[in-house]
Every structure is written in structure tokens, then in C-alpha cells.
Image (tube, rainbow, N blue to C red; front, side):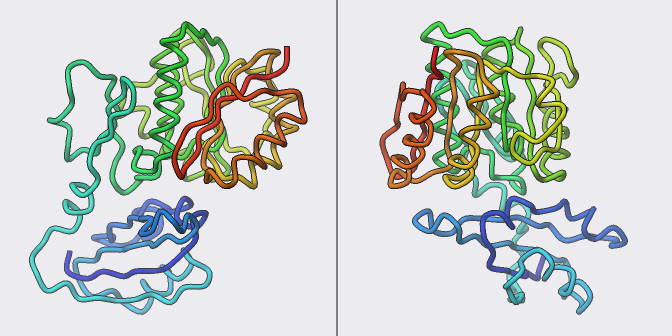
Length: 297
């Protein structure tokens, strides 16, 4: 891959990133498309990179512009012979959070014997745990299980790559679970990752149901309520907006894990849920905050 096209974008555009094969269906060798968050202090400033074997055409650049509304593609010729696909994957180091070990295909051989292991491709890295919120959610799930919590009906709202739903199912294998996302591509990615990681898909116990949903607006979600564990690693604004919907969708004393927010945003999120009778069971330290809440009895 000797050419790179970069577009500056926001987080929502990065998380809506399509598969290159879907975006360039007629290309003999489609580019490799990845996204990164170059500055964790600017959580909405992301970049999309597309790696091409040959100089991208005008038509290919026009297609790429659709990925980021206000960006002009920046085209670079990469002089060395680096395999940028391999480099993009090897640069994402495995994450260990609680009993979980999350890695890209490049680090399969590094899987420990004493961990629950998940493989997430580097091009779909939003859920690999590189972001502190994902690792924090994995650690919170691990602590809940070690504390003796038991859940039978789980929802992962805004699932991204499916990772948090997979982790919850590994901890409570007899539960039913549903994972949803507003982006159909994310749901497709979750389906592919489920196959890679041996997660059963379906409607029954020990199986994961997938659905496209805007927040809680889905007949599948409505049919599954009430949930005793609800996970939402999204953004502070949507967490506040969805507080009432979440409260209506959970059982008394249910557990909610909320993430995707800065510590400076946590108080406003907490206030929205406390107004609905929920209490804070855990608030993580650090710049990125993970909240564990308990619904009213």
C-alpha cells in the first residue's frame, strides 16, 4: 500500500465507517480504511485513513469525501515499502481489562491461557479497548461478576463492534442478550465478530440477538424489556437524552453501565439518572469516566 488518503472527521463519522469492499464494490483491490483518534483530549476530532496500492483516482476521492462532511482529502505518497495494513494492526496493542484480553489478529499468538480472549480487527478498532471507556466497561463487568451479580436479560446499546455484549455473555452464559446500534454497518460488523469469537447468535438463552436501533426505538428492544443489565458506551449527550427511555426499559434494581463521557461530563449524566431514582454504585477515576448505576427498587 503506497498511497494514503486522510480525512479529518468527527467521532460519529468515524464510527459509521463502512467496509471498504462495500464502499468500493467494483474495485479489484479496494483500499484499507481505518480510523483513529489522534488526540484523546479532543474526543470528537478523529481521522479516517484510506490506504491504496496505487494512486487514488478522482472518482475514488469523490467517494471518500462522502465519509466526512466537511473534510478535503489529503493525499500522500508513501515512499517506503511498509505494509501499512500490517502496521495499522500491529500498532494497536492488546488490552487486558479484568479477566479480558482483547487483541487484533496480529496479536493472536499473545493470547494468555488465563484470560477470556476476543479478537477485534484493527480496522474496526472502536471496540478494541484502545479507548479508555471500553477497557473501563470491561473491567466494570468483570467486577460485577466477581461480586456475585447475576443477570438474565442483557442489552448493549450502541454496540459498535459487539465487544461489550460478547464480554457480558461470557460472564453470564445463561443470559439472553441483545446488541443494537444506530449504524447498520456496526451491526454487520458485530455479526462478523460474533462468528470470529464463537458467540452464538439467536433469540434464546446464551445467544445474542442483533438489531439496528436509534436509541431504544426498536420493536426487538421493546419485546425484550425489561433488562436487568443495560450497557451503553456512547456519548454524554445521548446518555442524558436516553435517561428516561433507559429507566423505563430496566427492572427494579437493574444495573446500568454508562460510558463514553469525560469526567467533566459525569455530573450532568449522573444528575439525569438520579432524577429518575437511580443511584451511583461506582464512578471510575481518570479523564474518561465509567458509571455503574443501580435502578430504583
